[in-house]
Length: 83
Image 1: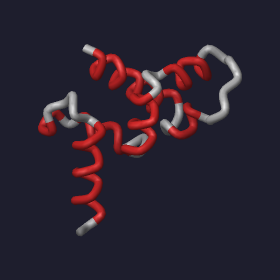
Image 2 (image 1 turned 30 degrees about the vertical axis):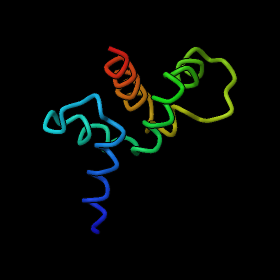
Image 3 (image 1 turned 60 degrees about the vertical axis):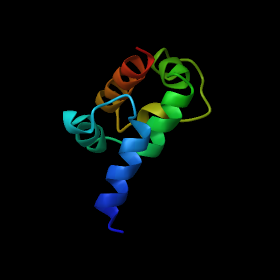
Image 4 (image 1 turned 120 degrees about the vertical axis):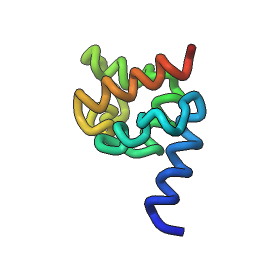
């Protein structure tokens, strides 16, 4: 299995709330990994939001999301998944 194929499968599993053709995985992949997005989705963005609010967190969520832009994109996925 190629890593590109593996990545598509990994993103499809994480972004079950998305149509695979909408390009969300391609955009997120520029900033972060499916594993990080899965972790943020699992905790409904609480850790990431806490860090953005300058509260102490055990993980560097923003760093793992690839910076502030990536963090915003990942939080948008939390919103989309909760709809």
